[in-house]
Amino acid sequence: MDADALLQRAIGTIGQSDPIVKLLQQVKLGRMKAGDAGLRAVVEAWLGTYEKMIKTEGLTQAALRRLDPAPRVAVLLEAGVLQADQPAVRGLAATFSQALANAPVE
Image 1 (tube, helix red, strand yellow):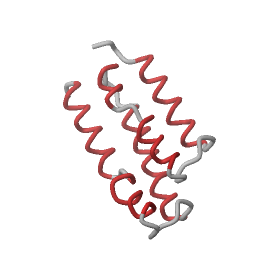
Image 2 (cartoon, helix red, strand yellow; image 1 turned 45 degrees about the horizontal axis):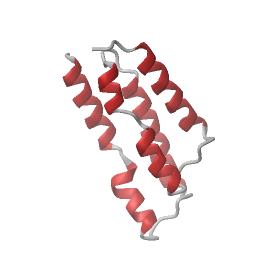
Image 3 (cartoon, rainbow, N blue to C red; image 1 turned 90 degrees about the vertical axis):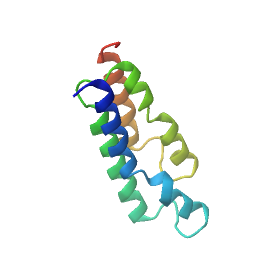
Image 4 (spheres, one colour; image 1 turned 180 degrees about the horizontal axis):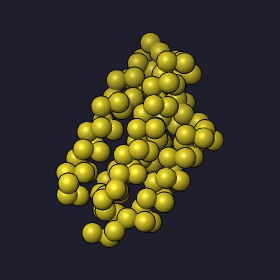
């Protein structure tokens, strides 16, 4: 599979379980609390999926930059859904940094 196909697959997989699209809106509308156990479980699963996709062999540095989890994690941190000191948050950031450092330039 070429780098573009890998990137598109990763984006699709991450997007399928992205909590920002539907669940964060529910938090903002007050229909769900940021600390809700169900929301937390969905977000933790999404972080795991994100980490798995970042580890995909064959992604270039350019592709990984497009998958950078920092902006999406920042939205969830701001909403109070995630905490910066959560192991899953720190693990995702570390995995991304390592994958970026080890990925081919192009």
